[in-house]
Length: 85
Image (cartoon, rainbow, N blue to C red; front, side, top):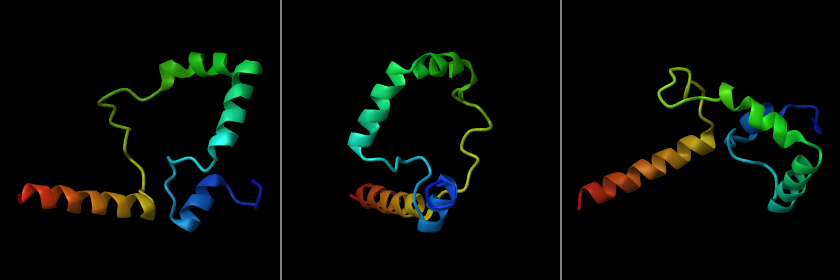
């Protein structure tokens, strides 16, 4: 919480996707290397049993950001354009 708000609050405030990363490629690479060196990778592997499975009724139950809605609407328009051809 660098600015006194959570990541979720930040994304909502600026209309960003919650599922898209906010880090640069270099920052991701640094964190990826750290994950392997400090043993975090082992905790991630243990958590696999708790992840969503295909057909899970809990999946997809969230409010989409403005960024996502804009992207989806643009995608739908593109699909509709090709359907008319």
